[in-house]
Structure formats: structure tokens, C-alpha cells
Amino acid sequence: MTVERYRIAAIPGDGVGPEVLDAGRRVLDAVGGRAGFAIQWQEIVAGGAGIDAYGAAIREEDVTVCAEADAVYLGAVGGPKWDDPDASVRPEQALFVLRGGLDLYANLRPVSVEPSLVRSSPLRPELLEGVDIVIVRELTGGLYFGQRQEGSQERGARAAHDTLPYTEQQIERVVRAAFELARGRRRQLTSVDKANVLATSRLWRKIVEEVATDFPGVTFEHRLVDAAAMMLIKRPASFDVIVTENVFGDILSDEASVLAGSLGMLPSASLGTRRTAHGTFGLYEPIHGSAPHLAGQDRANPIGTILSGAMLLRWSLGREAEAAAIEGAVRRALEDGLRTSDLARDDPRSEGGELQVVGTRAFAEAVVHRLTFEPPRHPTAAPQPEAEAIR
View 1: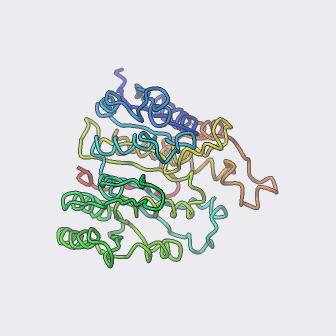
View 2: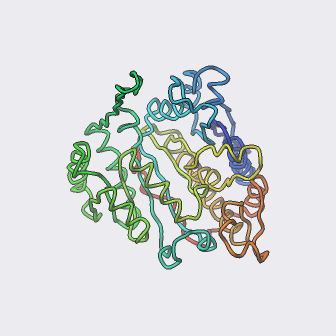
View 3: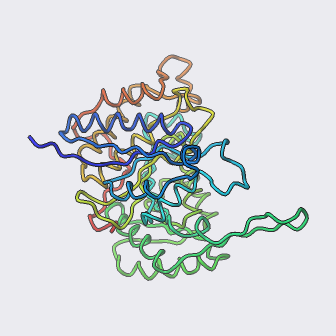
């Protein structure tokens, strides 16, 4: 029997990145072993580790390796070792190079609340009922890619500026992708901007209204980012798909991690225009940072990375059943009382012995042990739009 093989570029990165990525790889390899496919891993040194090894956050040849793979799987980059504000080379530049160089324009961040983790959220349980959101963040424009001037003048005369550029084409393609996604879900779209202040937001709002004419079955609304941030905590279940620009999406999705119980819970997919033989090319990573204070202690929460692996299977490899199997296994591990320390910290059941606090590796093994290919018991928040949604 011929075993189907996929090429995935793995970027462990810095801090807890290598640990959580190893956990995710263990789960993906286990799924492949049971489902009859194999993954050819191509490991890349990037981020702070790339600066230490090569003097660059990521090398050009490694970007080429990523571009030729079926998908990219990333841990996390950065840390205090490389935090000099005057440094010309910074770990985060690896992300910007990959997003820009691979044209990864749409970042999808699903947010849902596992019933067994309701006590891990600081919000009242009734606010968490029915939360199922996908935040679509534009990735290739805005402040992170605009021209800037560093505040390097003499003391007393220092000034700095960042610019926030967006083109019509950049806005339209991510907005169209979000409408497609909403059409395959609950048909509700919220566009978040700051149109009362920013020229780019006013352009964004105009383009949303133009694209909306192609999706008559989708209800849409505009919200200013400050109002959206408030409603995300006050009435999170009222949102379906949220689409917004780069910086707003970065902040709102981190805020949304409070709903799920921990920053370590949330996965993400950064999708581009290229189609592979199996699906849409993308980069997959948890939304959390490198958490250097936890590095090497086997304490990091690997769930966001493991669920990012499920998104990789669904979007880039076209393996829906295997993606659902991972999501179901994570759910069963949580229902069985397994917790990493960040999830157990504020749960009163920890003191009563109802929960079992485990490390990064043990949680990954627990997920592997619970893998089945039966339909999951609860619907997941991971997006399942039509095939044309991201092209």
C-alpha cells in the first residue's frame, strides 16, 4: 500500500516554542500512523535561535524551504535575550518575512469555550454559553509593515513615527475571505475598524460595504474597535466571524483568549493565495508568545499548538476526519480532568483532587492515547467554509 507523504516545515523557535511544537508533532505523527499517511519534517532554525546561529531571524534559503512545503508549523519566537530596542535584527522579523514573503494574508483564530473549562475563565458561566467565534485578521498590511522612523535622535529632540498603509486589494481579499467563512457558518459578520479617526479604516469600511453586495445572505455590521473590545467580554456569544486589520486583530484575539481560559488554548492559521495538491498553503501556530520564564520546565500549555496542527490537517492537507479526531481527543483529555498548570491555577477543583495537573509532554501523550476517528461529541469552533473561501 502506498503511504501518502506530506512535507511540513517545522520552526521550533525560542522559549517554550520547541517544547510545544514537539508536542504538536507527536500528535500529528500519531494521527498519521493511524490514518495511513506520513509527514516528512524539515526543521528550520529561526527567530532568536536564527539570530544566534546565523545573524538573521530567518535566512532566505529557509523561506524557500517553507514556500516549497505543504505547510509550515511554528512554535514561538522572541525573548528577553533579543529585546534590545536598538537592535537592527529582532526575532519577530522572521514572522514578518514569512507573512510577507509567502503572502500569508488571512490569519484565522477560532475561539470557543470547552464546557469543562468554564471555571478557568474569569467571566460568568452564562456569558460563555454558545461562544463560537472566528477572528479573521489581515496580516500583510498596516502598522507592522508601514514605514517607520525610530526615536534615535538626541535626548530632548527624540521623535518616532509609524505609518499604517493599506491598499484596496489587501482589504478586499481578506474581507471577501471573511464573508465566505461567515456564509459557511452562522452568516453573521462583524467588521472592526476605527473609522471615526483613521483614513485607512474609512477605506476599510467602504470596501466592506462593496464586498457585502456579493453576499446577500450574510448579515454584517461595523463596530469601532473600542466598542468591539468591550462587547467581546460583555456579550461574546453575539459574534460569529470578526474581520479586522492587523493590529486590531492581534489585540482582540489575545483578549479573546480570556474566554477560552488561557492564552495557551488558542490556535491559528495564516493562509495565503497558493493552492497545494491537498488544500491551501498556510502557516500554523499558537497565538501565545515564547514564555521564556517557562522554557525547559515541561509546564507550557501545548493545546494551542496541538489544535493548530488540527487546523493544518483541515486546511492544508484536506484531512477533515483526522483534524476532528485531534479536536475530539483534546476535548476528552480535558473532560477527564487533565490540566496544564495555567488551566488549573484558578479552578477550585484543583485543591479537591478532581483535576490532574500534567506537563507539556504528558498532555500530548494523553491526547495521543484518546485519538479516535469517531465524530467529536461537541461541534468545534474551527472554520469549515466552502472550498473557495481562501484562494
